[in-house]
Length: 193
Image 1: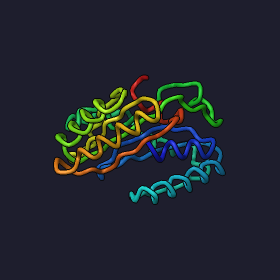
Image 2 (image 1 turned 45 degrees about the horizontal axis):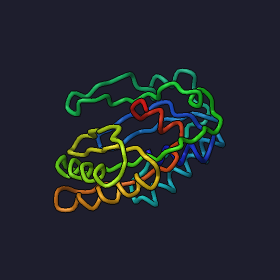
Image 3 (image 1 turned 180 degrees about the vertical axis):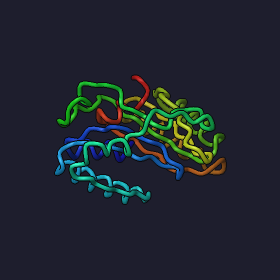
Image 4 (image 1 turned 135 degrees about the vertical axis):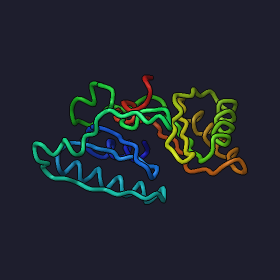
């Protein structure tokens, strides 16, 4: 979500799909003018470097008319993680074209751990620390789980910091991040707000 937010804020791109893979990770598939896609790809690499996470980026200039059959996945549900593995953006005004999208007037926070006990304790601490709302819980496989919260920027920062501090000793913190004013692409992949 952090990388997608940076990509959309950098260039006129539109998310087509987000597909979970087995690493655990996510394959983001975007479309837009070639120059914008290249700028978004550079932004993705820069953010991944700052976050110290592996990131494979590829740009396909002018994909063939039938190649979408290979890269656009059909809807899929994984019973092991009890959720879809292919996420399609909800239709929003911003997602129907490739102009730079408006940003939300709130923040989104993410806490990702390896271990259920750790994430549950982190989220309980987060919601007791600040006025935030839990939006979603996403299982990624391999014990990885992410919880998404929403609120004003200061509340989300305080909640994420408190939750992240609670993880130590209970599990492994994978990532904790706050996205102030998330982009339309990020919002389109979150549960309906």
